[in-house]
Length: 188
Image 1 (spheres, rainbow, N blue to C red):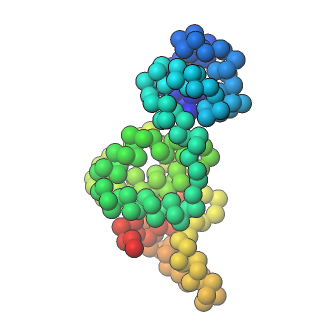
Image 2 (cartoon, one colour):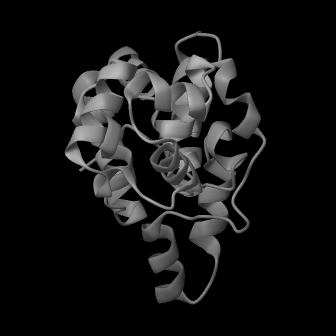
Image 3 (cartoon, rainbow, N blue to C red):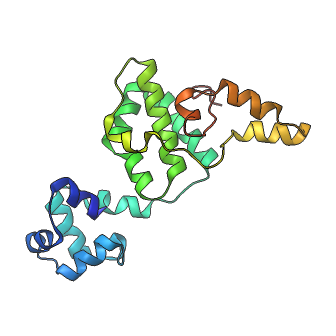
């Protein structure tokens, strides 16, 4: 998180150390991940928050988010979309930089799912794509990710009929990432 914030401000570790009065060695430890933000002192966290004009919570949040089951994640995102609508959902994803944050945390499946959702919503609402995600737009999962219901039905019937059908019907913005998603609005 700190490295990303520094890059946005085009500031070096030395400049950050001087501006915040945090020892250079501490800044280096934070940037390299030797020390995580939740483990740094409250005083240092406060100084960083003040310097970057952010709340202390928003600085440490990416490092304390607990990863959830992917099916739960998808369901949660679909419910959020239904609750707040297309445009507010798009704004929330972009404003909070969730895609880049998940990608940077190694949560590639979640990042690609959100990118698929964002690109899909942009297409159906005739909006331009967000170019800041071009660097990961061609990325895909190593294996195809199917909806749990299709996998379970195929296990019950000992075939791959439902996975094949789901793949054929999948939304293009998701399938390009090897994520099979047929409908984002049909929620229980």
